[in-house]
Image 1 (cartoon, rainbow, N blue to C red):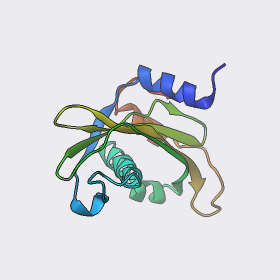
Image 2: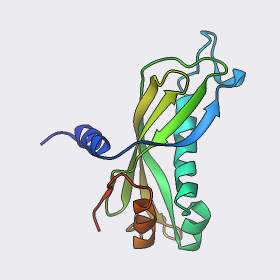
Image 3: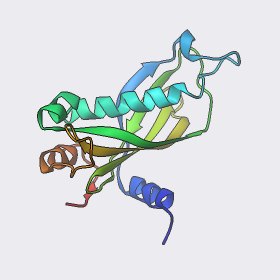
Image 4: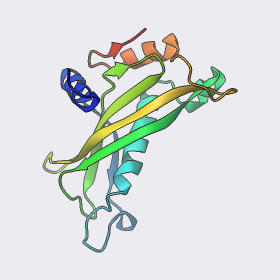
Length: 157
């Protein structure tokens, strides 16, 4: 059996990436080399997750109302190509697998002008109870909302 990274990659291939957030590279996001500073892609990744949650109509406010939250436990990015000032970046996600209390989002950033993949990776969140801060099962209502996103999501109910 492959390692977890291989399993996430395999799941991502079965699921479709969809653009959820776009941004135009600002001067403040570039470094002395004239390209986006690598750490900015983690912000782009986080913005993409927030946009995904809005798209499925199950944002942080609803999680809090339902008594749970998500915490990042792992984030990985691979840098493929540099983006420059003014480039428009399409940030894409798919959510191929929901565990009992975790959700891993495969992520990639593409330059709109030529479709080049600039960065790709994953971010894993764990669901926690808002009061105890202990891991908790991801509610069925969230799983159902995620299924509306498309891409043949797999889920451990």
